[in-house]
Length: 495
Ligand code: SF4
Image 1 (cartoon, rainbow, N blue to C red):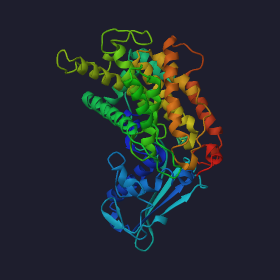
Image 2 (cartoon, helix red, strand yellow):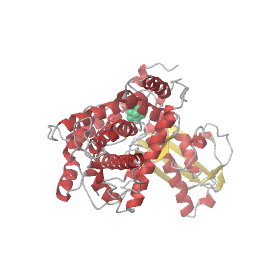
Image 3 (tube, rainbow, N blue to C red):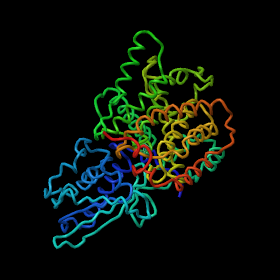
Image 4 (cartoon, rainbow, N blue to C red):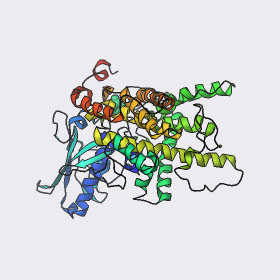
């Protein structure tokens, strides 16, 4: 089984605030409802219940887990559901009102049918949940246990593979074998990932799918940059991205120079504020860390792309010649009107974003396969650290970096997140999560800069830091793994 995970699984368009605590449980509930339908069991069901264990039980309410379970049981999916239909779906559920199971069968349901058991930790994963369906006599029709293993991925108890896992032509287990594969085939990391994607879909479908991911990411940045007020959840955290946008625009409109580094932070805050309010977000590779990749990609799109890419072999701010670097993916001629420079630039930017996302996918797969992308399993190093490494590698790729420079950038980014704990205040994905994404976005840019200044040779390999992250996650106290029982979560007084 290769480490590779599809870009369309790693970057799924869903809802906030958490991929493991919102998106994953919703998918589990949808899967459960579907099994009832396909197993011809639905007509026997009169009542459903859900037990949330471990981290899902500890911080589930703050992360909207019971709302997501209710929506999933109704058959609503994170990709297509109106986020407003999920928000508070559970708290507003009056006792005794029927729930439309799988969108078809009304069954008895009350708020208390979802129970929280934070002290019960199942051996399969810290994020576990059991769904049960009962008949009229109270007998169990069926029950399933699921693990939400991070990034919105779920695994059903008794199955080795995550639901939806697949095989690909280019197989690699770790960063060393990925680089070997690149050397042997002459492919870049992005081209190799693209070939894997095109084993399941046409070239046009892959390109369109990646563009859709980017459209959702950039749409989320824009939405967050224009939304003010307080975030939900009771901490009274004020949204800052739109305020910063106004400040930066005022500076720029006064004729002062652009402030790319400050925009980078604002982009990240924008996404994570959208996530915290339960908006439409792309998991990258989790929701808590969803701001880093879009922020770095938007930073490249807005401030770096046109400085060299798509305009011949011009020199980038780093001095590299990268004009032809984007011809690898989407090397097909782009249909743009003759002489329409903006259309050509836009097409080249999109090619760059596809390369960015594919490179990040190939790297993110390594963290998922060989360590973790789940805060409940490995602490925040697994979420924000992985996202930072993916963004650093993606940026290095679009800046024309070599395979080894990309590996180096990802390694630098991950190395300096080792040991980072997960301690969300009030069980909400707000403090420290939102600011942490802005900091990690700038770390990703720094890591890419350092890697691009070198020749790819370095002391600590990416595989070493992935393994170190895995071991550190095992050693980390449960208090610091999305339980809100330690760190900031117990030292910050909630108002
Ligand atoms: S502290 Fe990190 S891992 Fe924990 S919820 Fe926040 S972003 Fe996710």
